Amino acid sequence: MTAAITTPAIRLNHLSFGRPQARILENINLQLEAGHFLGIVGPNGAGKSTLLHIICGLIEPDDGHIDLFGECLSRGSRKRLLSQLRFLPQRQEGMSGMPLRVRHVVAMGLDSAYGPLWQRAPHRNLIDQALERTGIMAYADTDFRALSGGQQQRVRLARALVAMPRILLLDEPAAALDAPAQAKLYKLLRQLCDELDMSIVMVEHDIAAISDYVDSVACLNRSIHHHALRGETIPEQVWHDMYGNHMHIVAHDAACIGCSSHGDGPHNNETHYGQNT
Amino acid sequence: MMHEFLASVVMREALGPATLIAVVASSISVMVLAHRLAFLTVGVSHATLAGLGFAVVFSLPLLPSAALTAIAVALMLGVVSPKRGMNEDAATGVLFAGAMALGIVLLSGANRHEVDLFGLLFGNILMTSSEDRFWLVCGSVLAMTSLIWLAKPWWGMAFDAVSMRAMGLPVRRYRLLLYAVVGLTVVMCVKLAGIVLTAGLLVLPAASAWLWGRGLFSIWLISLFVSLIGTWVGLYVSYMLDWPSGATVVLLLCAIFIVSRITHRLVHHREARRHH
Image (tube, rainbow over all chains, first blue to last red; front, side, top):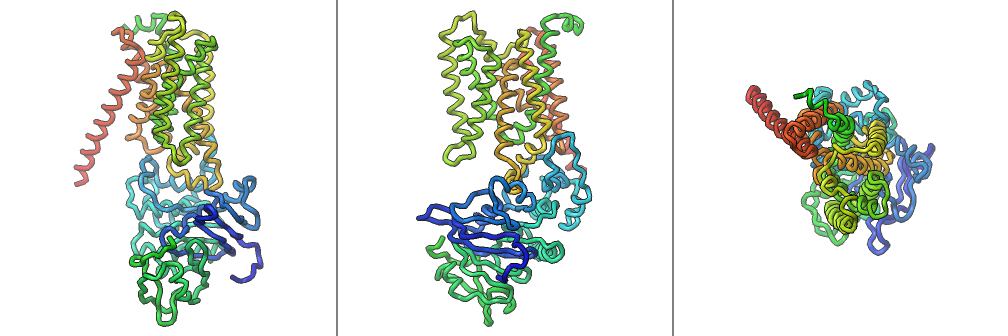
């Protein structure tokens, strides 16, 4: 990565997680500038979600430390630092059993939504803006449970965006979306980085789908095997280290990150993982 | 008949505490349902028997001792549950049986005139001392204040606690407070419905409201309404037919719940047919 001129939004130093004999993450070093869009790819069980959980303070690393906006993430600074960060966890079933209107779900992304009862939280324009951005304005007063999986995902995205965080962490945000909606989502995220200087870390399976939008891709399997900037080629050895030898390579556009000139990259559906999982 | 009911001193004195309990229980029941704590309320209410046993043996005031036991047990379950390896369900079951057994052993040694075991098990709202009423008011104020303060985070947590923690909100603290308040409310309900029937007061109002409400406040209001109707009509019916009051109230709440479900189904069927 280029040398930092301003304080980086995220900085991970020698981060490790898990027992020393069986590390889930090992010696992760990462730095993210404001406005940078980072994609993280890797096989199942590579520790991608764990890494996101550590960055947003859900679990504590066993080694190393995390700086957000140039300040160490600790018990004391946690509340202040994390109020400028939002995390969109992987989609889960069974949490949608509560009667809630879409507008209220989105409002839950604001700190002011958790005050005492007498405190009214208007912020209507912020909520409207988030609904508009994610294209779900029409469902503002619909019951959240009545929406389809893809629509629910967009509501959750709106909730993560509503406070205009400086850091956004996304764990497979496109899992419930069809291809056009996926492209729209990535485009929106790109726009947020460019216009609002938001820093985004996104975990995604399909490197081909995101490579047009992200600034860089980190290949993660226990440790970061490679960190490629846009247009850079990821050496074939990295793929072998990450996925083992039984991987199926399919052709991609030459312009995408990670593909060499004759075009190769992993096809995640048909990859057989080695002993690294 | 109504005149007779209101003329009865016993009933008039029971009406105040019963109403107070109805308001608190129905408000907390919204959170019980949102967080799926129905089984916890059962466990905690049975565990209060151990507290009452100790209170009788060491002649401590009954309601505060029971309240402390309930809060301690609820907090214990709140601490145990997030840890891996111990299922909250199993933990509740173990505590439920253990505390109940301890309570029975302790109470068996007590003088039969000291303890109204039937009242403890099935409620005795018709016999509230002024001391009881004082503790009931204290508990209600505490529970309602916490609810006014924390209803929004509690509601949000039930929806998605992970995102809230990632925002830097003290979700663990909120959860422990919720468990403590549920424990406190359980003890107050024991006064009206008894150990065995308490879960009814803490589940049925919100369960009836759940299908109709569109958010926290509408569910809360409907649940409040259901609970008050159930309690008032229940007391009246229990007086008229000479039924045990706690059981009558719970029975009425059950009836409201069933009617609410059936009506909801009928209404939705009609709506669905109109859409076709």
